Length: 81
Image (cartoon, rainbow, N blue to C red; front, side, top):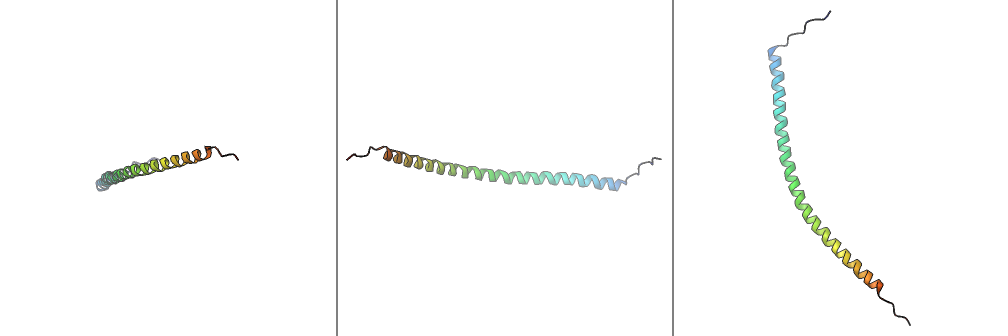
């Protein structure tokens, strides 16, 4: 009792294939645009990271110097009476 498959109109086939190809082309173009945008953001973040790393290094240096001064202050012998 199996029926023969229905023949699909060539117009419908053409429409389906056309929409599929248009969708693939749109997806490729959209991906390309987003990739370029993301690349620019990564460049900006890399520049900001360099500045941020320099600030953190300076802050760490100051902190180490302050800690060294505090340790030197604590290690001084106290005068006895």
